[in-house]
Amino acid sequence: AGETALLGVLERQLKCAIGHADAPTPAEVDRAVADMALKKAAEVDDRAARRMLAYAEAALEQEGAMALARAMAALGGVQHTVERSLLDSREGQVTIQASLKGADARRNEEDAEEATEEGGVVVPSMVMEEVRARLG
Image (cartoon, rainbow, N blue to C red; front, side):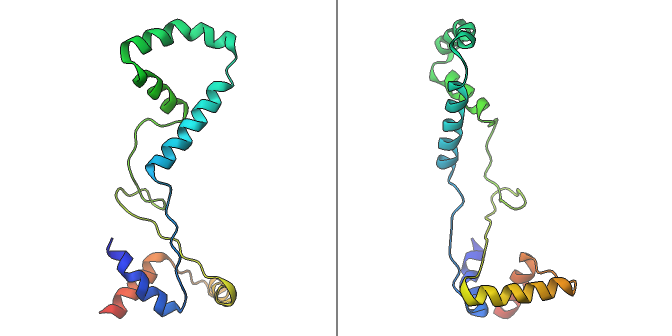
């Protein structure tokens, strides 16, 4: 949350606009997992499904829709969920990706190639340290 306020400072320092694109919401991820599970289930032929029918009916009787929900989650590869950073999997963190467009991007690509050739690499923490230093 604190880094969000620094984006304006970063924009001014870099003289470029920073666009915002959210990571998928948990609901969007759930929808994708459900769709994938249903597609996988649709690939099972009727003969194979019939072999599981008695077990499915027993599970539905015992657990109701929760049995189907657990089966869909398992098919989708979801055992448990925790919100994490996309970059380093730290819990409760947000990932920001910034890129330039147009002439600024081409100029910065050349600068980045030059820095890489000289052995210099810029990482997000370096950018944030610079922003914090300029803020005082």
